[in-house]
Image: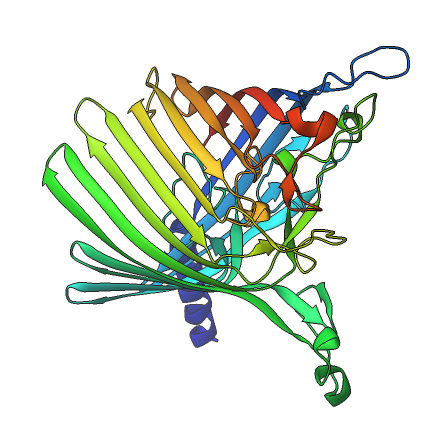
Length: 415
């Protein structure tokens, strides 16, 4: 009996010790945004009203709640967020006058960490934040809200480092894309159209950090990413498939769906921390060359395959940093996304592919962990091409070029 009591007390103290290592975190926010699309055709409806210009206004909210913990050589974390299923790259949800909102599991991971003298290693397993370094300002390649399922590796040796990941993106089940499970027979796997496999992303990214002085530091990374999937697609002609922009006296050429087949991407990332609270980010992503053709665009009617843009880049500069009450920052980004450059589902959803343009952003800390932010985009269609034929617009559509103006105000708290 005494042994049982001692064991129970020891277990209680052990549980309390582990509980003491737990740290809760979270945030709640609100966003109001305004979007205007203009196809530049000055098209009218039968009553003479303009249909070429469309305005959208939205109220949205977000919330995240998570916990982390750990002990010797082991760390773990779990989190939930608004958005639920289908919100890969955003946790904002449109308000519904108090109606129920979707909640999804955003993180569930554990990590093994080990110090081998001057070499540090970390292996993360489960649903986790992206292990790769990327431009978190523009989010041209990966959106900040994207979490992947699988394995993430990180190594650090002084000024050198190496990131790698193998992430599951679902499965192809007898030819159809679905969840991370599939079924097969010898017969179905013998036919290309009905074979089964896991879809995945495999990537590796060596990087270096140079510290010149206490106030000047640069980070440089080169990544290569191999995607085994054709489950994702991008919209052409500015990325917005709006029926209101496709009707009228001069019908607009409707956006087409461009399927991204097994991307093979190179990524070059360089960031600088400079004196006077200045910082600079630059990122370039180049995908393997793919054309407009019947394999990428359903119903393609071009006489020959046509070139499509396969690169994305962003260059940004920022002054200031928001860390405590009354801190502020302001920044500018110029960016461009080709139709075949990145997978839009994992990139910044506010700037779809086939767009190029300017971003201005600013943040102010009203109090500790209470920020107000502003962001403004001015974008225009990048390629100005009819994706069903692969050639430039003709006739009345020669002037077609979707231009988008967007601005948002956000406010939120963190703990």
